[in-house]
Image (cartoon, rainbow, N blue to C red):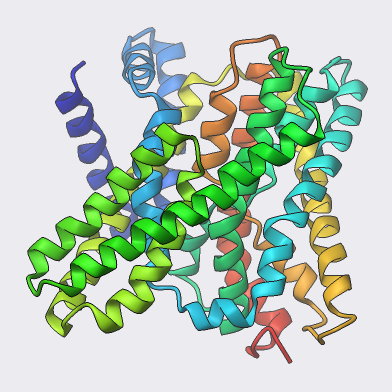
Length: 417
């Protein structure tokens, strides 16, 4: 199947499921699309097993033509991160900078270690001798909150302003730390045991700090170009070049593309919108990226629902996944509780902030994409399956209840006292 046929298939399926969700389920779009596509995929498998038709095999063949890892990490992600960062107020981020910084760095590292140890214990109880390095690898890919999932859910629910800023800021920045940790652990798991603390620190600086510096430089260059013209079509094309070309160049020089695009998006969304764009350009830019964000989100969540067709699920792995879901919530609570406890020594915070941030830890396509990038070793399929289960739980269960949960605990007040 060619590229055009694949795109036609995905867009057609997404449009039909979006229509069905709007007419009948009335769920938040992303959650509704994922649930319907998941149910459709499971139903397709059952029908094929009882009737002997080839629909299931044909659907699997289509999905195998789609490289989920490249589609998400090297296709959709840059545009959705830019669209999300474009509307984040840098002053709001600055007010929560310490909370966001600690959660996006120390919190991810702590969560990776806790998840790694707990998953090693659960695997051992199930009689699965998964090496510790692969358990840590699972911890690294599942610990960061997914900005795509988080921003999509936050758009459809009402949460206090401070809480929304903290969740949004953390989700935009913590994937960079998670990806760097994942790459280092993957190198060790693949046989690169020579990697030491110095190499890890060097890689982190190159990926994270290098990505931020590149994003600032590329964003400022784009800002200067936007300031010199007053034509919304040209200006939108310039931002597209910033997002696509900038992300591709980050891959080429091995710095963090996600962090670079977030920094560039914050610069264009704040300084660029005010000083380099007319009201007409701002309106067209907002409409363009809102539409692109909604379409890409819809396609991604449909893909996530359909990925169940290619999972190799066994009963043992299924129950291990169920057992690990509460472990992930505990690890998140622990990794959030320590940084918040330190901050409370200097600044008062809402008494329920740890509970809220724990339940707001939504995972999504990035975790699945990272899991699918693991080489085909013995433990790859169980890790992919458990990652998928964790993602579905966080989006469906946590995503559907996040608004009421946060609203009840926060009492409609801002996160900060």
